[in-house]
Picture: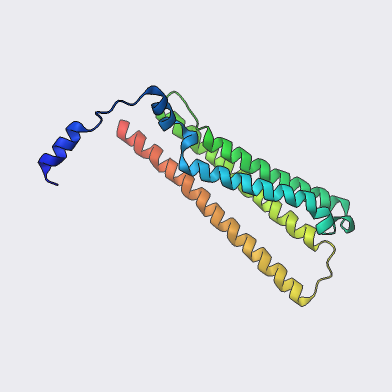
Amino acid sequence: MDIDDLKADWQNAGGEIVNDEKLKLMTRISQHPTLKKLRIKLILETVFLTVLLFVYYDGFDGDKKPLYANALLVSSVLLYIANNVLGFLFIKNPIRAENISLSIQKHVITLKRLSVFSLLSSVVYAVTLIFYFSVSIKFTSFKYVLLSLLIFSFTAIFYFSYIKWKDKIDHFSRVLSMYIKDIA
């Protein structure tokens, strides 16, 4: 393709008229493919954890565990689900402010809060899960090794989750600093 073909294509581009309904659909955030993937992930996790709540008592000998262990497990699962729903709602409904700079500033602040809540709810869920399954176990050397591997795995997951949150926050902070630098 030479420059004349490119110019001709440019001149002919946008010739079709897009109606208002199609424009509204194109600009809706809920139509974004990433949001659809997150919605599917949220639904699957919620269904899985809800099933866990319905079967844990019979399936994992909840009647032989202390009442507080059962209450902690249910509370931590509900906290984890609530965190996922809040995160999805945050992503689905972006912050709107008077201008782009203010929107990004609010977005960074909200991301920081959401990251703390997300990491804390994940830690509470993991610690409660480990506690629930180990509260009435008689530990042997092999079981201590398994417990150590489980704790190591959860720690690695938390670390990578922290890095992912930090990268998101840093990205929007850089966008904000570049935007402020450009308008100054």
